[in-house]
Length: 168
Image (tube, rainbow, N blue to C red):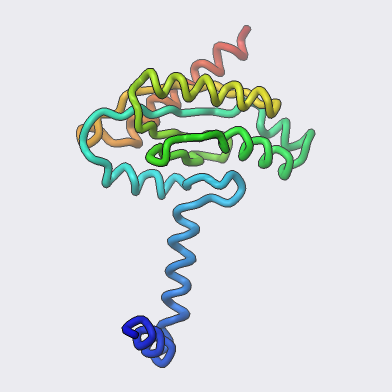
């Protein structure tokens, strides 16, 4: 009954359009459509309410995505990335697109061994889809350092991996 009156008042005063707009903005903030994973702002929001402790974070940079986009088309590459990351993660793991779209961050709700196992599974899943990636896993002391700082350091580690493999 209360919901009925709230909706009626909202319609009368024109708030329903604004409320629907806000709901849509929250949905867009939380979920990215091409890969069906969280957005960077949503990830950072999660990181601000994370309980203190040590967590493991992976930074992943997918290899040659722009070349594959040209060869296979955006739709097929998006499908392959989505399929790669559709494997079973814990409900408490957070997977998000990061910079330009070929970088992905995973916040694991497990110990280092669990994070390593999941990355091995992810590498197999990527290979099955014709994809590959470089990655780095790091420890994040929640509440003592920012998620951005940890992820920036991991990103630099991956950049150096890619640079050294390009020189071979």
